[in-house]
Image 1 (cartoon, helix red, strand yellow):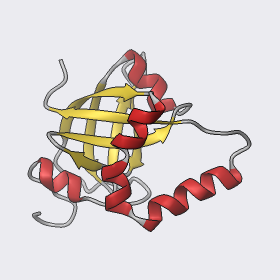
Image 2 (image 1 turned 45 degrees about the vertical axis):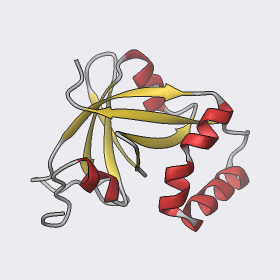
Image 3 (image 1 turned 120 degrees about the vertical axis):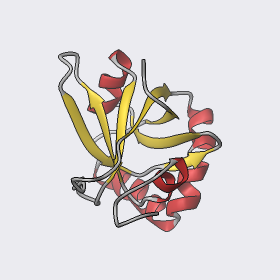
Image 4 (image 1 turned 180 degrees about the vertical axis):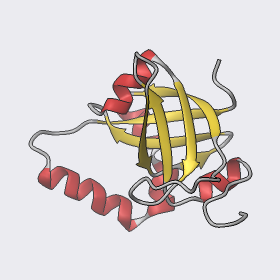
Length: 138
């Protein structure tokens, strides 16, 4: 990786602890949120609760942009933008299998996050996988 926060290719982006994931509202307004990301073959995977805004937005527009970021979503001004197209994977068995790269990368942090989510969530939150194919979305 180059200077802090600058990624040059897919491998670099997958090595980042946090990535700012931008999805688009129906109006075209971008919404960026920090996420954990892992590489799975030639694609990236992100896990998120099924009822989040990013999932709703992706159902209408699969385009995404990603940049290295801080835990709180702060992006360096010169951070490289990587585009792609996301698919929402909902099947529970497939989601568990596709979460393996995230589970391996984040280890105990991932398990703690899931535990806290269960502990503090008012209802059971099903999780989905966002499977992101790199390249300009068309």
